Length: 48
Image 1: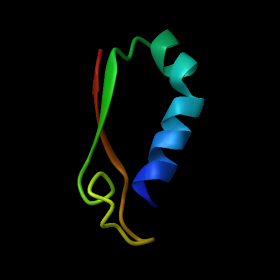
Image 2: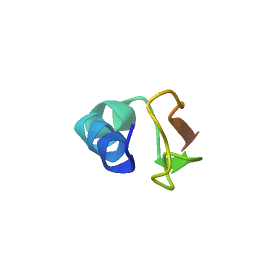
Image 3: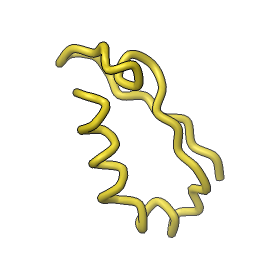
Image 4: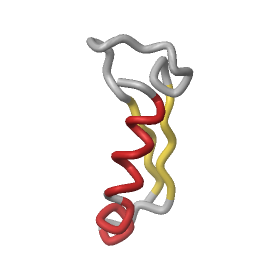
């Protein structure tokens, strides 16, 4: 997954995340650096 794809998905679900109490969500790891390949996981750190 590309960084831009991950951010697009998160933006599409922004309202749902806020309703669940998520205050911020950080993307980290290889996807955040746009150095991922198809088999790598997309990792997030959320703050409630």
